[in-house]
Amino acid sequence: MGFSGIAQAKQQSMRRSILLKVIRPQLDEVQQLLIAELMDTAVVRRSKTSHADVAKAVGKYVSTHAHGGDLITASTLDRSLAGACTL
Image (cartoon, rainbow, N blue to C red; front, side):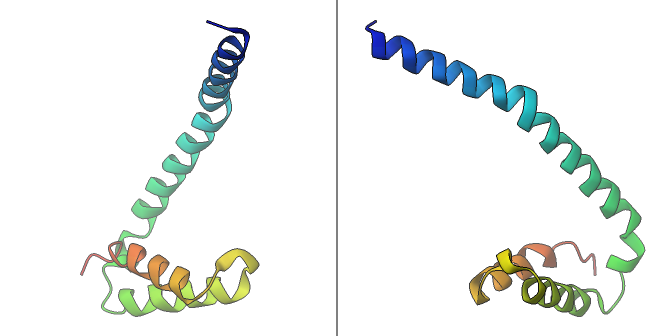
């Protein structure tokens, strides 16, 4: 293995280390918070207006956040969250 091969191997090792030590715990925390929110909102998500409420919330989010994106992003977000409604 040449010098560049050793350097690439070290970079890959560092990336894995960062993923495991920094990013993975953050993802685990987001996952735990998301599951807790799903549990806390079960009653609301079973309401007859849940789909409309989600669509309104997505529209408000997209319009008030600079990184919210365009119509395609809003549509994608709305569709992905529609499954959260349980009716």
